[in-house]
Length: 112
Image (cartoon, rainbow, N blue to C red):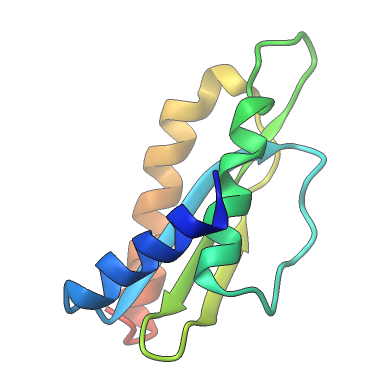
């Protein structure tokens, strides 16, 4: 994924009149450190890289979901989270659970 495509994606979101954007991806269980000052374009491009190796079905492999919410106007990170590690076979249940919790928390915080 090139940064050009990420830039075009950011432009489409901005031109679409959206206030914010949420990026969620499945990453290797080893990838868990916080990302605090990247732009939406940087994280969107980075999200494509772990997808190639996360959840490849290797025995004993773990993955996690990374979630980032950005302000479109300022292109600033306003909220982020990383799930606990889980087995790739559980990704559907974990994705649904994380999506539900993220939406609830964003509503509670007045961000939605």
